[in-house]
Length: 287
Ligand SMILES: C[S@@+](CC[C@H](N)C(=O)[O-])C[C@H]1O[C@@H](n2cnc3c(N)ncnc32)[C@H](O)[C@@H]1O
Image (cartoon, rainbow, N blue to C red; front, top):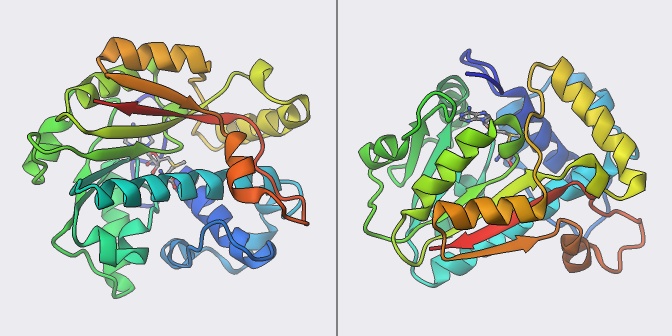
């Protein structure tokens, strides 16, 4: 594999970081909370001093923390809406420490939820879910896949019970920057072949020059941190490039959702100034 994560039976460090940002949101930001996730922290079980990590600095990294809870909330609303329309398959690509299944069992248990991630981190997550007594119910399927190693992971998904004749809601947050553009294009081609009525939401990092000037040093610092941690950001996309990729892959519809538009949606009227930094946008594509 060319890029992200550890290949050992431990958590992926990038997945832990975003889970800890979701936890920090509850600990340092005032209500109303954009997302309430208490379980990610339990799964991660970080060392006692985790809040002193430089990447958790409450003020210095508030824009990243806000962006992570904003995208999670956007995705969650989309999944709930799709479930309400009768979609019963939910695929989470690069699921990391996603906790939708544990936090929203009333919805998730009426679906089949497929969490796709690297084999090692996934073995670790299964173990943690069992240790915490949360378990892995039959409707939750953990599918080990390395997107860089296998062009076609849809077979692994089918083997785990995915029905290609039924529509699905598919999400991928915080993953494309760790993958080669070829791997993401291959993923998009597979997803474009899903049953009609399927929806994909996928986040991507913007090239630095498209960021608000004030956000550029933060992105550069996080790029340096990612490289030092062995999980470098290797792929950035302009919105147009991502839309073109999705259309060329065969999606019927492709829309760009700016990360900053989530600020208006979820952070308007806050008195603490918490707002997502610019830098990560979303593709929403339909079959
Ligand atoms: C930043 S985390 C995001 C986790 C989750 N989507 C979220 O938003 O909380 C990136 C995830 O992508 C996964 N990932 C990175 N490279 C991968 C690859 N080549 N194959 C499968 N998963 C990969 C990592 O294991 C990790 O869980």
